[in-house]
Length: 262
Image (cartoon, rainbow, N blue to C red; front, side):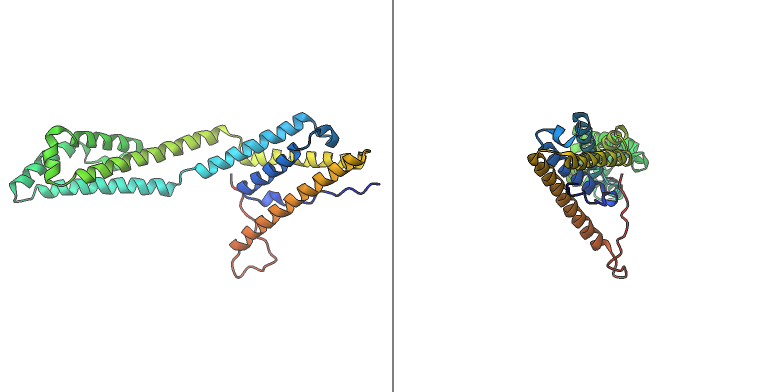
């Protein structure tokens, strides 16, 4: 029987999503270079299915990377709360001033902020809307003199910028969550991709055993060797990343399982 190289085991089941998707992207690009898929007995619909799965994996990975962290959103919310608190403190403090201009400015602005005293206790979206209302009221012409007297213009501008930044973060988080809900789960995609990849490899290997033309044997042998090189390369990358995560007490030969990321 003709000697045809076998496909190596990839160990891709333990890869994080980015590495897993990258592996299949690379393999799929190699298969796409084959001019005549009949030579490797890969039907067009199977090749298309593999391409679609790889595309979905890539999209899921992009969504995962685009997900807005809770910490970032919380930090932005904390900053706008700080600015609101400072704004209210300066105005309240002005009400105790012995200087008439500062006292009058405090009285003027206290009337403007009175409806917004509990703004920091509201839900995210409601707080965003309330802060916009607060800024709009403070920026009315009749309040400009008082704002200038208490030196609050820069604080109001910072608050407006932070409020809009928070709103952008929240919308991004909502959009990402909605997009993820429309996507097939990553675990399901990986299982389907594993099956399709295995079938393609089996067909390529069988084609090498059945090939009659020397050129076809050369093509298939070269294809298997190239994919094996890709397998080795991604194994090395994976093992290096795992090695960096090991603690000093972990024996070098032990490979810690990595949590799959959906």
